[in-house]
Image (cartoon, rainbow, N blue to C red; front, side, top):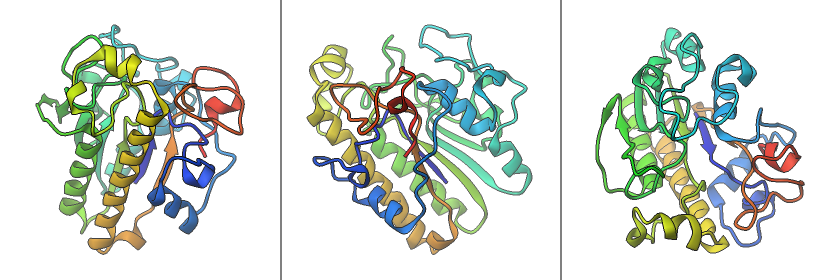
Length: 274
């Protein structure tokens, strides 16, 4: 299982020194497992790091060497890429992705065309956590290749769907990719239901450390729910779990300490996976 955070600063976890953010579940993973303290992302922004992670190649080879923006409706990763789930599927694994894709908008670029048996999530770079619309106000949440509508806070939805996936596949080998969109903007914690669809608030007014903290802590508690399900299913000790971030975070709300720089820059603060 790969759990991927989105725009998480290096210093935004308890285990990496955050004084104000509680992340007991991720801290527990670090305490019980192995920390890769010199691991680096392939790029300081979203799409290239995801392409590199799943393809095991430099992003330039995948056709996703830069961010795929919401306005670029025809762009996507090259169709001849073979990704990790394709190889695992051939080896008998059930494969699923729940969360953020961001490697192409047309259906021929959906994760279901790259080896994933199941997909629940969105294909753009970021969505409102409650209305599930992108910055162009297009609704963007899919089950397989069919659009569906849901009222759940998206971080909760990812964990709910992951628990369901584990329930259905606990007695077979599986690969589950959980690319959470938290704490990428828009800035909305689970308590901000009244801000659904309000871009003025979620992208500007709510750009505070307090809101960012609520998003990180919500993600941590939902990761805890998924880990508990693995244990309840009797496969916790048989499942390899990786946690990482796609790149560093933005200044003002996040901390990339002790590294210099932030998302989009070429300093370590943009690349350190922790």
